[in-house]
Length: 68
Image (cartoon, rainbow, N blue to C red):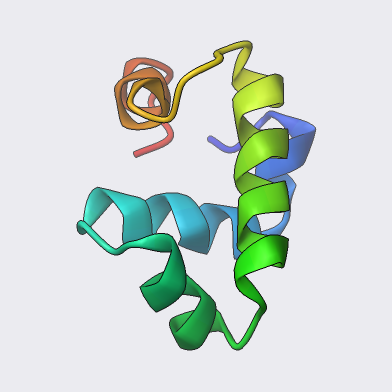
C-alpha cells in the first residue's frame, strides 16, 4: 500500500495519520518526540513525493492514492 519511498518510513506514515486526525505541527512533534523543524522537513518531503505544493492537499492526495 505504501509504495512511495517516503512512506516506507513509519514516522512519515504516522505524521500523515496525525494530520488526518487534526493534529498541529507542535502536537505532532510532542507525540513523536521530534522537533517541530524535523516535522516540517518531513512534511516538505512528503509534499515533494506527492508532487504537491500546499499543505491542504496532503490529505486529499494520500486518500486519492489509497494511503489513508
